[in-house]
Structures are given as C-alpha cells and as structure tokens.
Length: 432
Image (cartoon, rainbow, N blue to C red; front, side, top):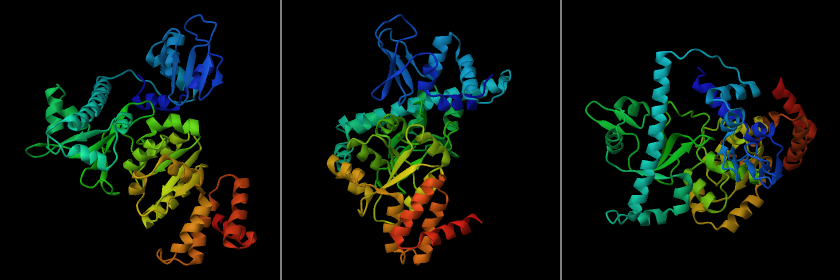
C-alpha cells in the first residue's frame, strides 16, 4: 500500500510535458505542446499537452487525463503501479506496507472527507446563485454590485455563500447521508455542548484547490467586514488542507502565470477578483504574514517572476518588505506595483483594465521600491538612515547568485550615494 503523502507528492511533482514527452515527440504550439497521439493511429497531430493545466487531450480519439492517467493508459497499468512508475521517475522515496484494517479505515475516511469538501463547494455556490435570483433577498444583488462581484468571478472561482443560521450546513450534510463523525473531522462543523455549529456563517466563500483541482479547504470574507485584512478566515484545521502549501487562486492562475511568465501575489481575496476582472488571472491570494517556502515552490512551477502590490499603508509596505526577503532568498525575480493608493482593495475595485496594465508595465524592481519607500517613512518606523540601510542590505546579502548580487550592490550604491566598497564591507560583516 502506498501512503497518501507519497501520492500527493507524485501528483505535485510530476510534470505532464515531461511524462508525455518521454513517449511522444512534442512540439511547441503557443502555450501548449502538440504531437501524434500514442493511443490511435493518426498522420496529423491532434494530441495536445497543456503544461499549465497539467493535462493531455487527444481531439482525435478523445483520450484525456493527467500525468498519472497517461502512464496508466500508455503502460496499461493500474493507478498504484502508475504512482510507482512516477515516483521512480522523479526519485521520490517511499515505503510500501500491506494495508492494515486501520489504514484502510483512514483511507476511507480521507476519501469521505474529500467527497464532503467537494459537495460543500457546490452547496455554497448554489446558495449564492439562488440568492442572486431570489425575491426573498432583494438587498443581495445591490450588495454584489457594491463590491463589483460579477458572474464571471463567481463561476471562475466557484464562489459561494454561507448563511447566518448556525447549523444549516450540518443539517444539510446529514440529510444527504454523511456521518456526523466525518463531517466534524472536516472542521466545517464543530460540536458544542448542546448543538452543532457551522464554521462559516454569513460569509462569502472561496474554495481553495490543489494544483490538481481538488478542493482542499475554504477561505471566507465576512459580509459585514468585506474590505478589512481581519475580515477573512481560512478553514485550516481540516486534515486535507496543508496551510503552508495551499494557495487560493493558484489552480485558476497557473495557466495565465505560465503564459505571461509572471504571478501576482496580493493580500485580500477581493483584490484577486478585481485583477481577474481586469484580465490578470495570474493572481493569487496569500494572507499577510503567511508566505511560505512551499507556497513559493508551488508558484515557481509555472513562473520564476512574482509581482507584489502595495498601497501607502504601513502594513502594506512592511508586508512587501517581508515578502521580498522570502522571495529573494528563494531566487525569485520580484517586482512591486506601488499604487500609492490609500487602500488597495478599494482602489482596484474601481480601476479600468488600461490603468491596471499601466501599473504592471511601470512596476518597480524590489530594490528601487524599498529605497523609494522606506527612507521617506523612516521616522514613522522609528528608524534612521543607518537602520534603513541595514534593513535593505539584509536582503541584498541573501541574493543567491553572486553575479546578480554584484549588480544590486552597484545599483544600491548609486541609489543611496554610497561607495560600493562600503556596501561590500557591510555584506562581509553580515556573513561573519
């Protein structure tokens, strides 16, 4: 028996273009790859591979699937044998044990949780759609209009709605035959002394998907606190959810990120929606203070260039600094869109596509952003010039590539009007 963690690692690691490319001669066709189908005889290529979506599709015979499905079909083996083939291909170590009754029970519970998560996505989404057309909630359509939440946004991100009644989801799930113990294990519902409580109440719901498209968790925005950085929460206690790895919007953003060779990271779900509505689907939401190395690795499967967005608030500027530090350490190319707005969420809500595109075109290199932003607010930060210098040079010191680091030393010297020798001396002191 192969454990679920190995299966998940294979799914996350295997690249469809590499797996198929070992058996099929593929040629570039736009953002996709094209070749002769290995599953039927053809003279004109109709077999398409999409690296962004992680799938293959033959428009001649109809065969389609992901990396695991391709290996299963091509080698005529079952699911677990395909996992073994791909684990060997990508040097993923694992141990196999005969599935014990306890392990079988855990697997069945995991599968049941996945069914509940997927069903709940559809349930919340249907609540939102029904409320939009219901005469019983006449104020809801103006509410969506106020926040510029469109039908395209709802469809693309499978957005849903939870109502204020405390046990509505629980009662609906049990009516569908789901067992109480499994429902509670998803953390969608908690058990009180005398009643069951839904985790989400009166909130706009965003399903969080794995790169493969499975629902792994949910994020929500409180309907009474839509534009606050404290107004949203994430279902993080669910065993299927890996908080240090999962990213809201990456499943939808991966294709555009690959095509545009860039991914935008923003700090509020609504900002992701507004960028999407302005033709920037390569946008993902990561809450302030939570960017992890594993999340970066997920994004850099599709692009090594990341753009951050900032307004004038102190929290936004400092969050950009912290994210820049983490991203540079991972060798990512980083740019900043400095909108100079009072509130980024409100600003993006009212912008046209041309304005958004101008912002992206004029985005700043991270070093220019930090020099131009931190020095003017040094007193508000309780720092002097030396402290700001040290704060920036800490990031310069972790640039992994020596040549790139030299370029930034030269540019930093020019921007702050200090000798390069002094900057190199400080870098040596940091390295001691």
